Image (cartoon, rainbow over all chains, first blue to last red; front, side):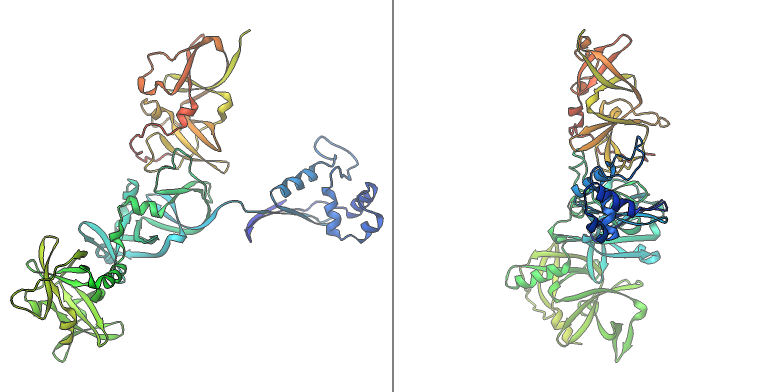
Length: 401
Length: 154
């Protein structure tokens, strides 16, 4: 006997095939006539498939002997009734002397969702794919340098935009896999307007999972959306992406910088704006309106080339002129292996401003005050997070290039 | 001939306990559990019971008894809870006992105050005292204990 079960077209298909004697359709037809279910004419005209269906009639049996478990004509009737009761269908195919196949189709009443299975310290968790944006894997050097800290909070620079990171192990109060230091797996998730990266130990497969609700003793845990049974029979918890984001304290201010920049443009006339705060060195702190910032990039010092007395770097298939803010405002940068570049672009072209440390992106009410000496290089000065910060006039400086 | 009641009995540490038999779905030996991080201490984990996900509650924790020795595996007393099933982790499974209601007594004062309300009463049996659990109270979200330390559930 062969048993096949699969999920297709929103239905569960179950096929049971045997290599037995098969249905004797002649006898079935004759019995059908005998029992008055069909006339002789109908029986002759019936297709084999319809003739086979006769066995489902109540009390129908071609058995010559009744045993304790069969022969009374009750079994198949009960089977068909029960399957039809859950809106399913049952079908027979048979060949005399070769065998019979029974096909049952039952519509799905279960919630099935596509999910990504991830691992933390040997346990598995499922993340609904509807919240999944992309996967990022950092290895070796990238794994060490890729995670930056803004006010103690881990972030990752995903294509220039800062992505807040949440460690699954921390959220669950668990250990991390000790070997995880060489590799950082980031699952980029989005729930409503909260975009963040969930750091996990391992990324397993994508899988379609049946969502089962948690019992009432566990319903209050906002980090879980339910549970599922994996292919090997083990139970895995399904993460609630919104619940994890809220529990991690990701608030509206963590929305990605582009949304903030968009808002900043809307607020152009208003008193509040979004600023990218950078240090040139320990003494001087500068702010750049994010509405003027195209991207943030990191480049290796070695990639800077000289042309016509200017520094440039090859960037996205074009040549990007560089302007060191230290040349304009004074101060010096510790020349490490990498430089932070704030890319500015307008109708005339792009240029990259070399800054020191990227401190933060803040949304703040800025009172622009000009000093006695007005410098066209600055839009004003403000106190941001307790420090005097000059606001750089990027368009003006870019003109010099 | 007085009325009798039937109880499914089991032991936790040195306590001999029972639950009305009509509330018990089945009893099982130890089942592999999946830990639920962040759940309260008495949630031992989740069990796959013939395709149904069953929450396992550790009675030792719930009754504020010391934890089971590491090499001792718990048994499962599975209770029906509305449309779910919840399993109580116990040390040993006893028999189904038919008990004379005349033997009913209030819960003795030796039972600690903070767990007294989990019992509906006691029955004085020839050799021991049977404490009957209030399964409804047991299954309700009890005190919020601190989140569980997910030690490998085996």
